[in-house]
Length: 323
Image (cartoon, rainbow, N blue to C red):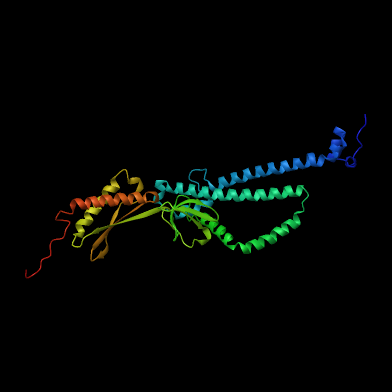
């Protein structure tokens, strides 16, 4: 029986080639051990290591952005607590708002972490195949500078998106006014924010182009209802009726959770030749502002319709001397 000739690599002590030669006696297997065993093992180790590091980073991000202890607020979310009105703590809206913000920031950080891990693992894999990373990194740096000059708008959008999320300007589910487009936020990205208006139209707004944004559903809302009445109306009687409507709404158990303060009659808001407008206002939760304003309009209208024929609501006729 002929034995394979001892390969040159098996002459070095402690090498994988020598160990394979001593175990198998196969020269071709010993010479190919680096590609058949060492490199696949190294690649498998890199992939497994990347997955483990990714899992640890995602777990750490979730622990940072989510509060697991009752009453304890992560430092990342403390500015939100400081800005929130104390009245919202009773309704639980702070917790819900914080949860939405934490989920948004957590999603962005996890994506950034995953991209970083993939890039590092890819470079390590290329190094295992003998690719010289020096020229590659230098070329990537030059290309990055050129791309930065050519994609300034993209960089601007991404940076604006990051600050929007960190500053909690808005989040998914908020109703916002961005000037040219307004509606409910459906998705937030680092480059584009997607919102849908009242007509069902989907708007895609580049984050870098948002110069101002009005958030209609952050924290609390103030509902103003202007009630038009004709000239000559007894203002005191009309305000009494509106104040009574506000008191009844505040006592209604079906609406108490939506009202942060009892409705307040502010008085005459507008005056014109066609009549005047009386305003009643109420502070509500952001989610309930639209249904509260509809209910308040309906109740005020019904109350004034019932009593408008009563003498107390209308002013007495004006007397003209000499008639």
